[in-house]
Amino acid sequence: MEKKILVTLVLVVAAANFGMARSGQYDEAAREQEKVQKQMAQEAQAPEKHNPAKNFATGIKEVTYDNVRDTLSDTGGSTMREKPIVGTLDGTQQAGEKVVDNTIKGVKKVASLGYAKDDSYEIAQPEKGSGDAAKIKLFKF
Image (cartoon, rainbow, N blue to C red; front, side, top):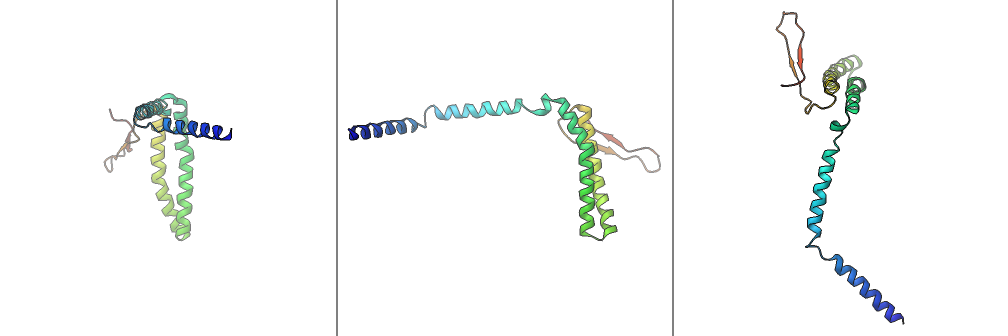
């Protein structure tokens, strides 16, 4: 009786393994189709396209929180590496560039509700002695 159960069990396991061993027929096409469907679903779920309020908040975060974080980390890091006064001045100068960059990118996200496709911008410096302010071009039309 035990031999019959053992033989039946071996046959069932062998049949299951044989059924799973067919890898060249429908599995590859189905897997490829699943990959394409997952990729299309991920592209459709892009947060910039479906949630303008979240993109607006992200822009505000860049203008406020990211600026403070970068300023403090750059100033503190430079102060630790160099003499206190020189390090503070160098860190503040380095952080100033990031503050301008974060502010411009944040304003661009807020103005476009996150629909702008790129983070690039141009700064046009005025002529010396003209008294004009620098002009920042956020969007290229």
